[in-house]
Length: 126
Image 1 (cartoon, rainbow, N blue to C red):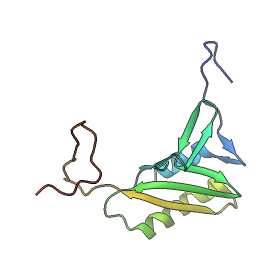
Image 2 (tube, helix red, strand yellow):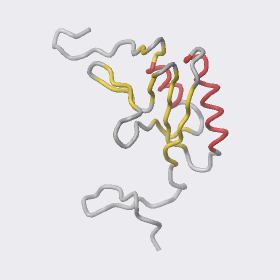
Image 3 (cartoon, rainbow, N blue to C red):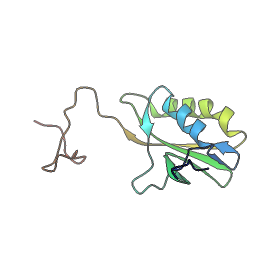
């Protein structure tokens, strides 16, 4: 559906019976989740008309959710929590949880390159 100006109006994002917007919102709201992660090349992203939902893919009867964890959250606990939170939204489909990254510890200075972009390869300042 489009508006009179021709822009895409976000609608229900249902793929194979799963509302990927609802899954993304529930995952983002889960304690211990810092954010969704679409992958380095967008491989864990649902592509919809005029937009995309990073971090959620419905394919092959499964739902894959990829997140960035907050610091000091045990991975098995976070995966179990996400699976439990998402179960009502995914029906009988298995939920595959991938923890792609972990936030830096609190108080860690951000390392930047000469271009001002974060330098993810930089270690702690000494």
